[in-house]
Amino acid sequence: MKIVWVTSEAVPFAKTGGLADVSGALPEALAARGHDLYVIMPYYPQQFAKLDLTFDSSYNLLDIPLGNETKWAAVRIKKIRKGLTYCFIEYNRFFDRPTLYDWNGQEYPDNAERFIFFSRAAMQTISALRLNPDILHLNDWHCALCAVYLKSLLYSGNPAFRNCRSVITIHNIGYQGIFDKFNILLTGLGWEYFNYGCLEFHDQLNLLKGGIMCADKVNTVSKTYAEEILTPEYGFALDPALQYCMKQGKLRGILNGIDVSEWDPEKDPLLPQNFTAQDLTGKAICKQALQKRFGLPLKAKTPLFGVISRLAYQKGLDVFAAALEEMLAENDFQFILIGSGDPSLQQWFKLLAEKYPQKLAIFIGYAQNKDSHLLEAGADFFVMPSRYEPCGLNQMYSMRYGTLPIVRCTGGLADTVINYDPEKINTSTGFVLHELHTESLRNTIRWAADVFRKKTEHITLMRKNGMNTDFSWDHTASLYEEMYHDAHQ
Ligand code: ADP
Ligand code: GLC
Image 1 (cartoon, helix red, strand yellow):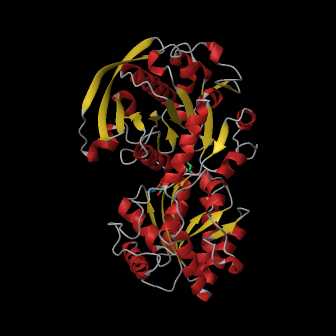
Image 2: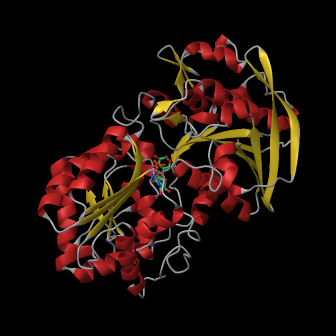
Image 3: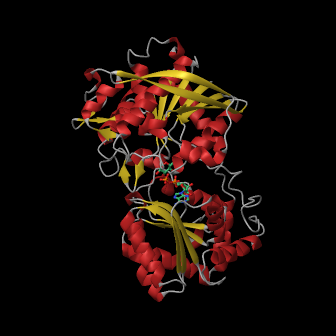
């Protein structure tokens, strides 16, 4: 099939979270299975600067209608390998920014304009390059509008889309692209699209909703999350729209994979020593190197808990921060946190790290790969107490590196981590809590530490179980293929 994958971020070009990991890996996996993939994303000069990119060709005058005007952009084309080509939309007024979506926690005020533009630019690129895709695969709100365009008179008669069906993947329903309704004037679509069955949402414009309503298939990134978003608790007010999709047989959950060649403890060049499930000696050396790197005492027998995360409400790290102080005061534990986001949470962790420098080390900001890999490999446990988690990748990276995840039972975390049960030690892979409260999180962390001290053989078995689990993209890619075929039924 010819598949056009549209995304606002992809590894290694630009990343704020898991969407970039998935956009970097899944098109690769599909191309490896013989499909012809085009990835369309913005060209972000500030993020691309250190990559030293060269392009194979350019399409220099792409016209993009935006409101009453026409903007002119360039498409930079780069063939990565057979079956995988990137098309970067270059338009500096919108994409030459220090960060992708926001600055100091504040969304850029022109985000509606930026991503309506990007969606229209993706459609114009497909048309100009005559890509004739079988599948237009959209990701999250930034490009959701493409599904509306495809069904609209603007593109339904365009020969470049003759055989095209659209699919949208919801990576996080907490972000929908909700804007003032008058932004519809920028889209080129008439007010007839501003209705309950399309882009209208409480008298505002909701780009993700339009995508969900118009796409031929909708999926999210785990089975449990696909069920959760049908409820008011998790649906962020789109649960009625998703219920409607469900009834039409349009909605499904497909668990993400991870890039098992990038995250491979046996070969990872970023680790001071490699290790395998059969021989975990290298992991102890990684722990030591991690403690050294973050300035903590080199203590092999002290349980070390790691976190790498956006500091966003979704991730439940406010509860973790509240649980932390008592443990730092009372227990012989070590914690390392890498994160950025919520300024007050950053401040809270800073104060705690200053008060307990022997037990808590933090890095506020976006860490280098080297540090993320070292933390995944060197920690004993990885804490992810998310309020909701569509899939979550770090718990899988952790398991691959023999680090036991401590997670709340939600979304993809529920689908990937099997709670410790001494009776079922051959299948256990981590520690699972149900209610997100300070006390329950503290108890779970203390429980894990207790097992670490008293039942070393159980910890070792669980590490091996996680390391032997197959999280590769290959199986996932076949489920996407199935969805693409169903979209054509
Ligand atoms: P989400 O996409 O919701 O942030 P995921 O678990 O799917 O959650 O993916 C997060 C990705 O972003 C992981 O690859 C994680 O390592 C990375 N990440 C998050 N915050 C940071 C940070 N401050 N520094 C480095 N990597 C980070
Ligand atoms: C989102 C979700 C995360 C998921 C990622 C990739 O950012 O928050 O749970 O793993 O997308 O699908």
